[in-house]
Image 1 (cartoon, rainbow, N blue to C red):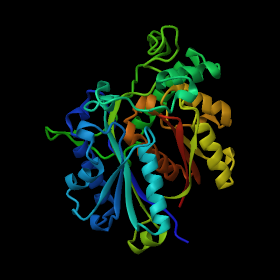
Image 2 (cartoon, rainbow, N blue to C red):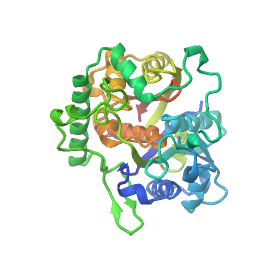
Image 3 (tube, one colour):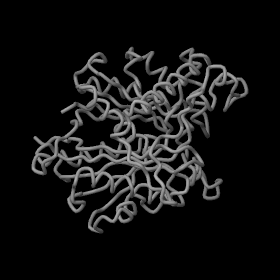
Length: 383
């Protein structure tokens, strides 16, 4: 029976909005991470059956099937196809799921899954184009009694429902920055990060969103972002960011034929849906579904990567799952490192699989909330 394994996983450093990566076209940023993956694995790109690329704001520089143009910009043979996936924030995690399914079914021998988002150049919400071409959703939301929704308000609903205080969220955010700073200082990210060549020829080697001098007092002074009396702020939400990441997926048999030593097996991959108005609780049922299908318990998982879209999301997830907090996002999360939407799923997976290898962790679980009320969950098994 065919399996799906990860041979290598790489990512760019994550840039802040308007920061070091803002001068790069997202196609060219994607190309750099593809080239780096090929160089590290010494794969002949002609062997790649497909490049499955996640991207959320597919407009302007990120439209026209950016996955295909990333392949061409990387200098790979034109025979290598590419496709672009949108499952909102989970787009590149879904790309990995599609790659694994294609490999297991025999449609692919080798696939590259990943994604990109350059939010400095293609801002969040830009596909709505000011409503010039109409609005999405159709009648889909009528059953919920609304005609629009917002993730920030969804996060506030979760904080209220789970009785998560502003102080809880600010402490959680500060902890994320502390963990990320420790990971950077100890070199834990060096093996997974590909320094990016900037337009002026200099190298950008390190995540730039981590706030080392942040304090609870500084976080507490921030104004609510979405409602005057709310508790969600810019400090306890994910950062607007630029970045890309890529994962090489194949079968164990094909990996051995190429002399590759896989890092992990994609053990279980599931999806879940939830209320699309609050929308961000999806990781809770997705985690339960993944564990059930894998016949594992929370205690069997040595590390969890749960996207920190908002502190309320991960704190609610902790309350529902009973997972040990020390195993959650051990190297910091999106509140500290950033959340380049279409790249985040592959970024989390890159961070997870390297952490598992570095610490001999057998099972790791990744999950993330997604606009519209869905969530992916993936369990990896160390090889």
